[in-house]
Image (cartoon, rainbow, N blue to C red; front, side):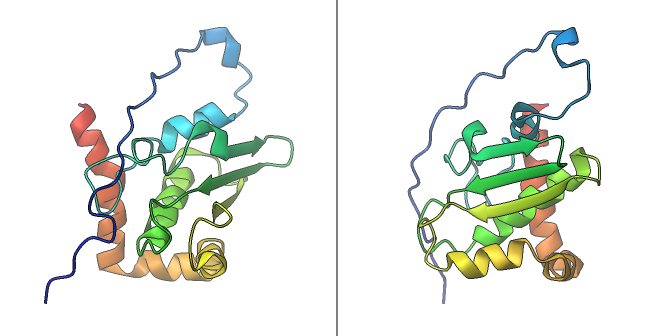
Length: 157
């Protein structure tokens, strides 16, 4: 028995132009939403050969950074309400942020309200340290996350 894709024909959007920054405009090393967006925009969707940005799963506007409180919040929108990969997408976001930003940042990752049929459960899984740690110990899941994170780097070389 072969399972089909839940969203076999997603809408693909053009990628936005990367914003060039002047060297001194970001000299204080403060993290802002553009820094966060640039670090996660190229993560590949687990089911499709497109980035999360291209599928409009996330945007710069869906990211909030409070440098004073040390908090990064990302809200993402799965392409369909019954997306079985929503937790994998959230896990990819979390792992990438763990790799790119200092550990003092508290990271909250949630699906956009009303965008997923099992929103409460997905949000709970994505923000529970023990569940995240357990998920990352699963070799198959870790391989999938790594493929989503690093396949985009292969295409951009």
